[in-house]
Image (cartoon, rainbow, N blue to C red; front, side, top):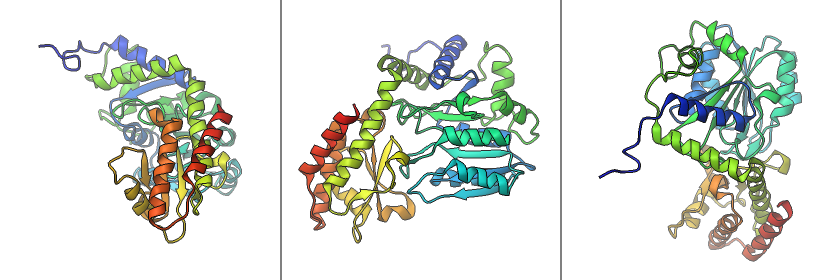
Amino acid sequence: MTHPFLDLAPLSAARFAAIEDRVARLLGTEQDVVIMQGEALLPLEGAIRGTAGPGTTALNVITGPYGQTFGNWLRDCGASVIDLAVPFHTAVTADQIREAFAEHPEIDFVSLVHAEAATGNTNPVAEIGEAVRAHGALFYLDAVASIGAEPVLPDAWGVDLCVIGAQKAMGGPAGVSAVSVSERAWARMAANPAAPRRSYLSLLDWKERWFDGGRKTLLHAPAQLEMLALEACVERIEGDGLDAVMSRHRAAALSTRAGAVALGGGLEPYVYEAGEAAPVATTLRTPPGVNASSVVAKALSEGSALPLAAGGGSLAEEMIRVNHYGPDARQDLVESCLVALGTALAEFGVAVDPEGARRAVSAGWAQDR
């Protein structure tokens, strides 16, 4: 008995290359795009270990937990790391980047997260890229959450290493990811004796055995189901139109903010400025004395599968995250999340207005659409 998932013909090198080309078009890039056979942490770590080492001076921007992880990897590689941390309720600015360059002209590597799903902020990459390009540093960008929700343009922004994953705004599989690599980044890797080689983390292996060979022979057997799911995911985005997909995410974010404010009871957006809020997830601050984790647990206690979560670590007491990315970028789901939060808050003795929240979501969604 045949099975559609188990009895598949092997994925050919030509098909693999064609999927890479579609991802490159999604990014609007002429750079090499390497599809990695694992979750996005694989190329995120591989790109840092390939390009950083002793002698590297890195400016590591921290606007959420992933920035902290990148700093750890950079230090582990032997790089000198200058952390630029900003409060999680805001975004970093290009002026702050320029100030860091003026204070540390030796900086030759910049690591940045575009949209922070964990904290709900997004950073102005176009302006930051201009500053990085003027300084001449290598620019590494985590666009895992932002791709599909807002513009991601590595060529236009001067990004040398742009890592994406399909599992958030793209609405695709979690087990496959990609990174676009500039010629400058390839040259940095080739000159780095500590860059992984003959390793699952190695981007250079893909350069030397895949791209330099004309993309004729794959390094190893690809994760076939994930590759086919990625292809279907990109095909769906192409069919809907990238602008339409981004519009849904923008509408979800704006209507969630508006609905949370209308819900009342002291619930408020965690990221102060709407222009600095990520389109993939809206973070909310609970009223004083109300534990965010308890509110989320109460909101989900009926067994609902709503995309709600408390903040991680120390943020678990005060932050609620509404994840409205991929298939969850929908008006009805935003409304359901806010109503569930309102019901939970009411049980903690907080006065809320669920119908007001519904009206605000509906009005906000219609206005943006």
